[in-house]
Image (tube, rainbow, N blue to C red):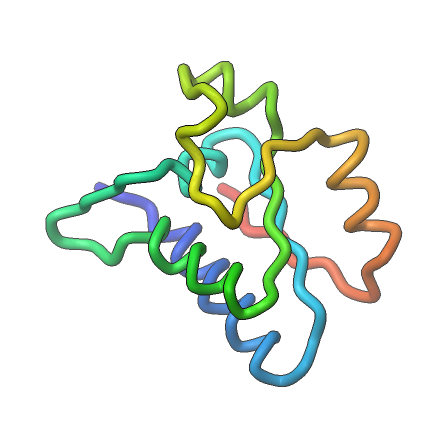
Length: 106
């Protein structure tokens, strides 16, 4: 079974942008896999393509570098719209700038 958490997060981000909100997304843990370039799921939407489109629409994206490396990814394997960042810099900056926070986790 494939989790659709990332797909739901991207749809929420797109809906918020459509209403004029500034949206920041931060991926950590297994969430970093969403920014892997070249995804080609057979029966599911490509969350990587959806994230790239969201980035072009103004959604700021960053992921945890430690989580990314821990899953065997290297810099350059992420989609262009995603910044490989850190919890201490990017996530905390996003939190300090936010009026609202939505988390999607299991």
